[in-house]
Amino acid sequence: SADLKLLEEAMISVCKSLVEKNPRTRNLGSLIKVFVSRTKELKISAQCQ
Image 1 (cartoon, rainbow, N blue to C red):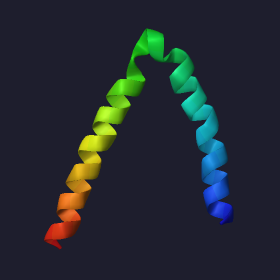
Image 2: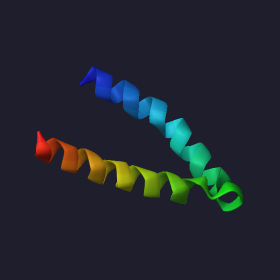
Image 3: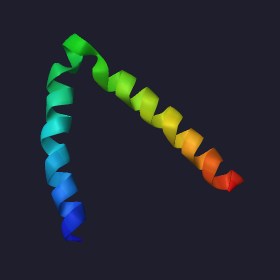
Image 4: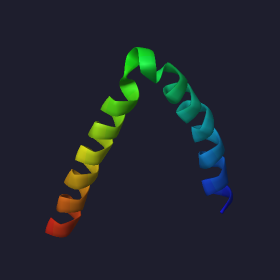
């Protein structure tokens, strides 16, 4: 869809920036850990409803 395409295009620059700066900041690993944790929480919450 058009919305998905816009989201994807917006995320490309964010992802490139994270990858380029990751050796110095190590934010990418932290972001992935938080994302996985929140995903698990949302899945559990959805199962309870």
